[in-house]
Length: 444
Image 1 (cartoon, rainbow, N blue to C red):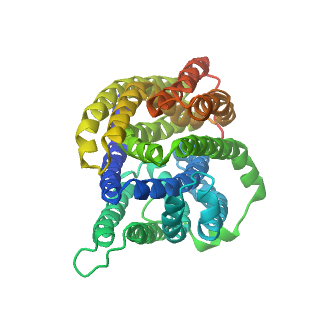
Image 2: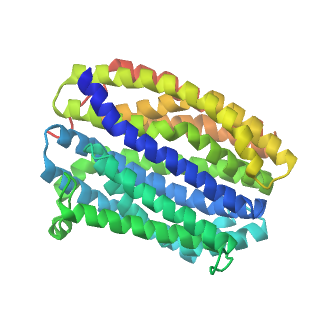
């Protein structure tokens, strides 16, 4: 029990602190852009929706690799950890090339899929062509940060993230509003600040992995040692995760498309709600990562009973924290919303939507920790993939399209229509957890 607590605190606390500051600074960034009006909020929000798809694909690749890294870490096999990271970077860089092409060469065509507002598309295009370059830095940094957390070095990504986020926030302040000698660039200034912060973050991670002071290190030679048999073994576990995150991100893009078709005010509402709602998930990253490390390392050592008991404890902790977090975002939303330059109708819509999302947070967090953290740590990625896709595309997407585009219900009701899929996932995911069929050692 003591070992469990120590590991949980060692992993979860730095990640939670990082997430809290990240969400806080992202909120500040969002508020700065919010001062430019609903069109600016909508344009940046749509580009970030495309970036969100890349982040989820990269997260999927990192999670797939994390299954192996956590179990290799359980037996302290650092050479195999290096091999896993380098092979997964081939996947994330491939995805980065695709998204760079979309964001840099075809921004207008991409954004026009979401909105018919010419001013939103024009402003979004100027933002997109700059942030497109960040995809290469992000694809590397995300994988290395995930690996460092998995080998219980969570403080390093925390410190690097704090520096990068601080630079991004300061850059936004100076370049959006033109403070001192800096020009007033608006949305373009926000894009430049993002590019600068991502590039500095990337350089920090390059320094870390080549200094060889942690279990996560890379050599140039490792990139030229492609092992197709190892890659095939890894992708058997990782490919359902990558496909899962990609299909899930497309589902979220459909949600954004529905809101965009409702109108620019609805896009702005979704962007604000997502920012405030993310406060509820600051603890998920910590507990989810702890689940991967604690449960995965136990499975790597074939301590199956200890792995199951640890997973149960993590779910109980998640329930308590998520209830408190849900209440907190409902209360905080009434304070934060005052800082946005929006009309009373949008303000009222945001507050009602936040009330719905805050009440649903415990269900969403339990699903996230169980599916993304626990079941995946045992290599049960195919089951999670089927469950996520069936619930999203079979329940969530049809209900949102029906309520938003066909029946033309209000924005809060559209948010309500997102919840049945979460209830379905909680039921089926809970049954899978109790069956123990997800507990596997994948590194032998």
